[in-house]
Length: 229
Image 1: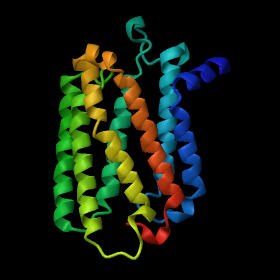
Image 2: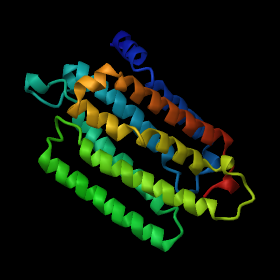
Image 3: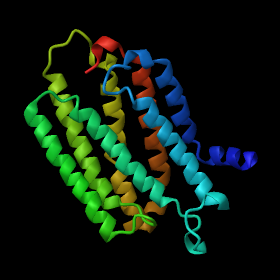
Image 4: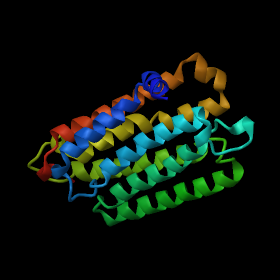
């Protein structure tokens, strides 16, 4: 099993990025322990263990959810749960960071639309065997909207600290880089699979993940407590 797991890490070479980022986030925890990002190391750990669990479900009988051999390898449900948890986490961050009440109200409407999107998708699609990619698309758009509101507020505020020292700026940058492409890549996986494999979009998705977590790591390393907001 150890050999197989090492082979898995070799093939899924982006997963160690989660662990490295988690270590960096833990070492720099004092910079943001009392901010809205205080649970971020927990979220990174959750991401890491979701990927590991996904591997065991797919390749080991003892971790499989379904007795039907046609679906014995299927681990989609844990990623659907992860998507809902992930978007909820980031919505929480921006909702509690925005200061403009109008912006908060707009974001609440966006979150409601996102929630409805997942609720409808659960009934229209099978969340146990297919990614809720339409709901993910809506959720990504809402998240990008939230980031846009945050950046607009931040740029309009006087500050003695350059943006490069603000941890949430780097988190936002990483999220933007990923979520501009992520939902469309998943959409193509299910609606245009030949296009997906022809243009190696899975590799692009992995690159986006690594870029996102590199930007997170830069933020943890460069950030200063007084520059946060």
